[in-house]
Image 1 (cartoon, rainbow, N blue to C red):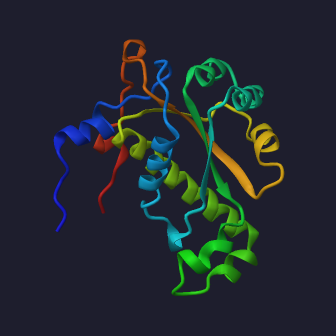
Image 2 (cartoon, one colour):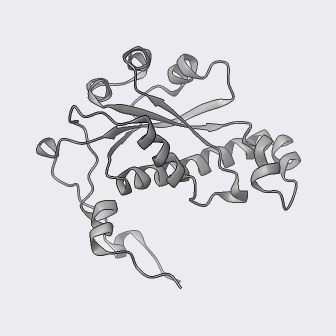
Length: 196
């Protein structure tokens, strides 16, 4: 039987966590990036499809390649962040289903239906992107997800010779709490939910 996690953990993952836009000059190790993925990968996806792929942009050269695809203030945020993760999906994710979902051969279903395959990859990489943010927070990092960028430019710059396609980007590192904006409001249960 599962038991609720501690209030401290809930605060770190949800209620006290903020989207960060300013970053401390503190390195994020490759090993910690590996840990983030290795925690996030356990979140559920349909048919265990696990279509998310991540490109961690860390080097100055890689950042310079990413900057032309960004909009407005996102340029400086990415420039300052220790790491920017390009959360993507593999359009040919179904090629791995024989390993990930061995109980039934679902590969032909996706291979023969590109629209369903793309929808499944996008939806489930979005889910996995949320798990990624929570995994980063659980491991003591802050996150700054963003969608203010040109997907086509990102894909041309980084994925031109692959089957990966960008979904969203997410800065990660150690946020500068002194530069946080006030927390935005959220909808109440009654405004956002129905029970039938």
